[in-house]
Image (cartoon, rainbow, N blue to C red):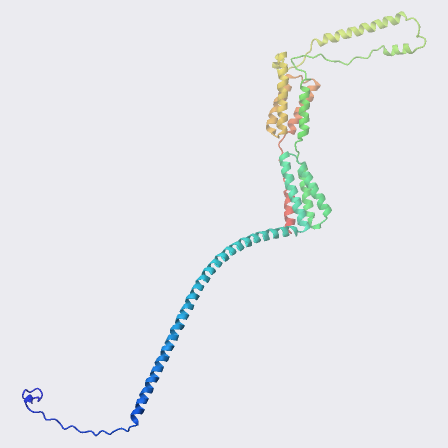
Length: 377
């Protein structure tokens, strides 16, 4: 079946159209057209008013937006300025905080010092007494070690005992007992008497020039014998009959005999003094020349002075060496039968026996008792 539109023969054939229906148009009334026109005009006016109102609102909104934008810009500037001010204030605050922290640290240090001061001021009387005694004993111990004498330590212990006795605190009786033990222990130690030893050495130095040498013989001094005729003479002079009377012949012979006896005794004594027999243990001492005796005495003095300096400086080993040399020289070159030589040798021995190094005891009992009492035990 062919399509009538697409067929070529269809163009030539006449088209049969359908009949058009005829519509009848009614005419509107005459008053309706102006009303419609007026309605349209009214609508147009309303639309224009709405458009103008919308435009006014948009303009108002634009102005409000501009104003708000200006306010926002102003506020942003103010905020930036305030931010800068806040930064400056923050920096100032940080500096002030650092300064306050430094002052706070200083105040803390001062507070700790003040607390220590208050604590030291608020210590009880017992603690102050114990601390003072402990400090005094330690200072006295140092003085005793420097001077080599026990007197500073003994004096400090006695002073502490007297102070505790005046204080009369029963709980400190243990400290007093410890002080008594330390006093006895310190006194029991024999300490070298530096002053006495120095005086003895000076005495030996003074005696050196008077000591007799073995090489130089000295005459012996004997006590004079009393005259036997003295009582008769005194009796004769006391007799009233003999006064003014002539001297009898017998009396002259007796006086002459006494004079001759005295002269003979004197001559015999001088003769005996020319020869002296003694025992010499060291023969070399007899060969000492007279001119060497001076140097011997001076060398002996130097030895003794060196020993004296060593004793004063508490170098007891050096002092012992010099004293031994001096004692050997005295026993070797000087006459030990002389009393002065014996005295000099005895003084040197005494100095040598006293120049000994002695370790002073420490007051450990007292210090321990003080520590225990301070701790409250």
